[in-house]
Length: 177
Image 1 (cartoon, helix red, strand yellow):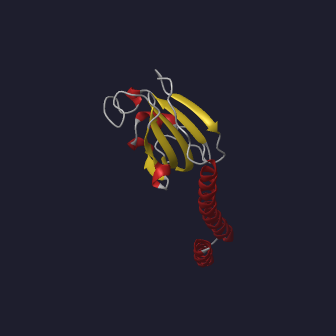
Image 2 (spheres, helix red, strand yellow):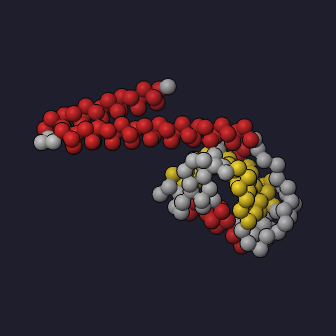
Image 3 (spheres, one colour):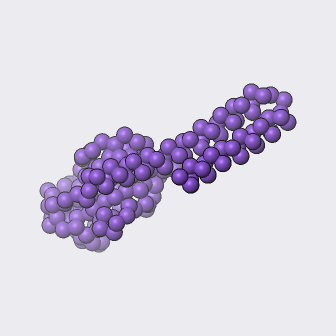
């Protein structure tokens, strides 16, 4: 509620600024165009915030996924369990997700944002290659399973040395760079 009032105040300030600038301008059309653009941008920010809340609620409703052993892949396997309807992840994006990760050979969970009780946010250029490639094209609101060979994960290091990994990822929001 407070952010909605703040958005209205910001739109009002932007509109007032445009009107003053328009009065000094030689063209009323330019002032109207700028005012309309300011209102649209403010509306887009509010809509994006609302979408993230909606997608977070959808992920919460689905709940934490059950992970189990998986066949060890020779290449990245991507399965869309739920196809999202929001913005699509592009290279260089920053994502906010709920996820669980397990060793493919045992099904033992080694990491889960669900167990921490809050989504995680990070840039795709700062994660394992299986995530950077595996989340491309995913849309907000979707759930995707990634089965990642060791060479696209942590190799002989990390939480499951030499093992493939299974991640189930719910995409809450994306900011494309």
